Length: 285
Image 1 (cartoon, rainbow, N blue to C red):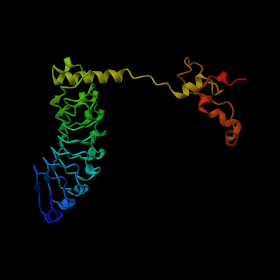
Image 2: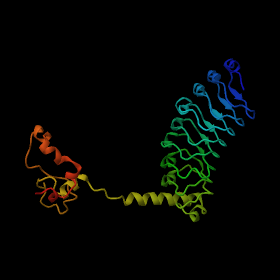
Image 3: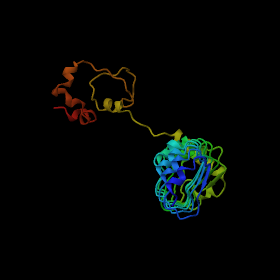
Image 4: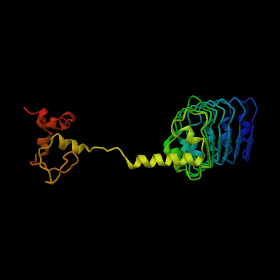
């Protein structure tokens, strides 16, 4: 262990390196190291990091590889805004806190060899991220968020040896991407024959797939169209040349009732979902 009183006196420390020991915890007083830029606690028996680490706001590099970490402090991304490198590989992390998407200075995120089941959404906020490694989470990680393809500074992406079947189409938009590692995944899209060609082939395949989906969007029918189709409103159409009543959204209610009248028990039923979306003759007596 490291005595609390010792750490509290190291106010001018810039690099704190205690790797390859048998530490089971870090002192809470580590939060007093306001000038700390590099913290190396790798190769220990840590299961968590003290929440007070949030106070090390000058921290630029955190190395916690080869420990037994199961969680990271929930607010770590809200406070360590100068962090450029986060190395947490070879731990037991199941997820990354949502706050990690606020690490806007982060350039390297190494989270391989964990038990990650998913990545946070809103990764596009990591505007300076150049290297993302979430490989070898084996049977746990089976998908990537669409926002991975919005990491505009990304140069290297390693998702090898996971259970990923589909890469997000958005990856085709990563213009700076130079290295993509996807081996060891049961990929269906893009197929392995495309992956084996080149990175350019993969990006081209995903871009074409994304463009094809945008050109043939699914047709969503307006709920107003349903009202017109089923004759819920006894109004007449604004145009006499409308051939498809379902597509038209223009109608006029022929009579007006006061608010009190509409709110009375007699008329409340006419606004129920069953009344609105049922054929007109269903309620005809």
